[in-house]
Image (cartoon, rainbow, N blue to C red; front, top):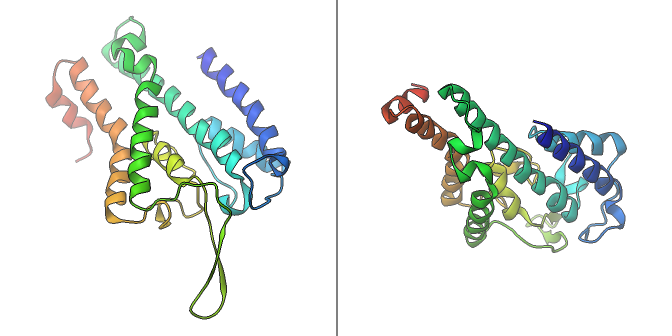
Length: 223
């Protein structure tokens, strides 16, 4: 799809310079340095292509601006293109020549109409449960042993939602959803498991509607 390749190349060209100069940009309260040339290229290519491979520790590498403007943004874009390619696969399975986005209607034409509002609502829900969402510097805390521990801060909730909803990887913290700042309660764990299943589960039902046999859609699930 030429449009997808052009969009990916354009945003890749934006992400690399952003990572390379983050030291002098705002929303970097920890004063993190610029990302190395090879790592910035690798990270931009990884998030552009929905691979989301992290060859770095987010807490000590990426500024808040880089996390939001580059990585979280790509989680939205790559999920949109993934959604459209899946609708193309549905069109192929039906054997129709109609435009693939017309098959599943306006949802496929503009997935952001669903991804963005749902991400905002669920991010607020996660914040109510204790997932961090701020632009504060890291917190220094004294442990019971008298040592000093650094507690990360930052806009985690907004990135956590689209990471899961768009079946992306690459969390805000190195431990991803195993970290209590991203997944603090059993309820948030349930919500996050639900998010990662929403689109794949919905597509099996979509297949059933397309072939006019929703019972057949259940056979797409593994036994």
